[in-house]
Length: 194
Image 1 (cartoon, helix red, strand yellow):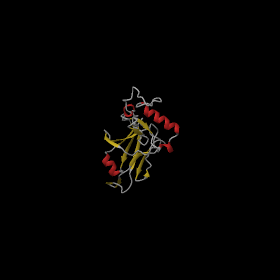
Image 2: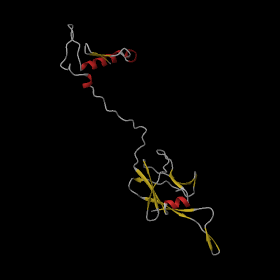
Image 3: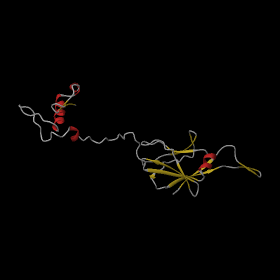
Image 4: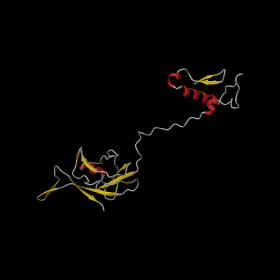
């Protein structure tokens, strides 16, 4: 838009002839000049009662709406399980990692928060969708045979409900009167609360 200070009129720049239709150009010019001066009859121009109003005073732009299409959905659910050991001892002796497998709506969840419990350590992760998820125990990238066979169910955030628990067991070897630890292997017992 170009403002003619002499005639107090707004007009469209010549560049718009290629990009806007004549109807659009006419409508824009009419709207821009509504709040300012208005062309009069044959004898010249007259000013309306709103001649003192400027286009900037009448135009109120719409608020900018942020684009949230790439933002992850809000976390509404949690999944908790317990290991009958401290996190430090479990990580050092067993060395396996747990994760909730990928589902149709959500990727892998392996960001666990830990908290001490009466029997060991509670692991909690948060999810956005209430759908069955597969709990997998892994050493490096190999899935262990102790993974929970059926899908686990998430609960609302703050519920703190534990339905699965693991008891790490280190087997011992007895030879006569001597008791020692094996050089390889670890056994973990999986339990499910009622």
